[in-house]
Image (cartoon, rainbow, N blue to C red):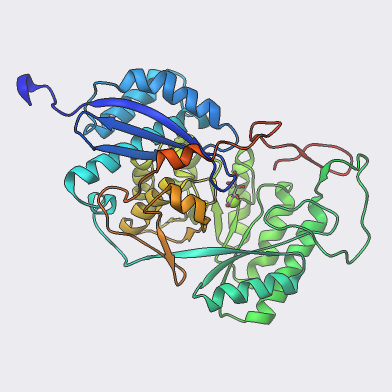
Length: 414
Ligand code: GCO
Ligand code: MG
């Protein structure tokens, strides 16, 4: 620390784009002037990955080179305002790549896993929920049973709706009349058959399993708010662990109408980017589980504050954990899950062999739990040469989503 200036400096910031299992992942690597000392962060916004790469490579890199990587909070706050306009998914993901990498570096410097820097373990391992889908109730039930046999106490149940494209499950065995869309080539969804089928699904599952398993469901913001309220009320008797994304972010004020009507536990927020979307909802206790996608809000720094805020309102964490969170992002989820008292549940994604080879140290999943490998930092690395062998797959929309429409052709929320 000569002349009061830091000896340790950021020397490079770069994005690594890779898709070992076909899912577009964006990882940021922050390098320092200390040989071998670098950090990794997740910046995966799988529908717009190239926009995030531009934000990192063209804007954050020149802003950060020469800065002290120990000043995580200062780097977060100054990057946040360096674009003046802020809080969007692209810039938040770019900042998350850097923020997680800085926590990784600090952990390596301290020779401690990141969960230690956050206060140490509140629990030995992190309970996971698995995804069980199927085109019939029996298939969904059989898949739930398989997970229970592997030690899972929490399972998300999604069933295909005949004739429609359904989130979380393919197919759907026709049981009644199938209405044809005006345009036969479009992906179609109708809310009413979905709501009716899901209510029957949970009736079937509770009859089959009694109280042996905790059940979850993701509505994926697809239905009109008043039907979502009906669904939440009807499902109350099946005692879900949580019902996710009953409303689109644009409709969250409906939570104020839903809450007095049902005690079905509500999980929401994977689509939130901006603190003003969640802070008012938290202070009014309008949901039970915060589902934020950590890279979408800017990384570990904002997420640890959010978890602490939620703790005072007894809202539990259920950080978003699908396949389009990179293994680095899952390692960040794990660090928070272990250290935050108000942990609720963690969504799991079991990465394929290729992804595990590209990311040595990928969090271990065993007996329905995720475990820390106890390595310093986030405990995860990347084999850059191998990552290059899995470029983003060719796709007409570069990974963007095609629309889903009603029978008459009206586009809906995905
Ligand atoms: C979930 C989610 C995801 C999202 C996906 C979007 O709860 O796991 O809803 O499956 O759809 O992450 O890219
Ligand atoms: Mg979801």
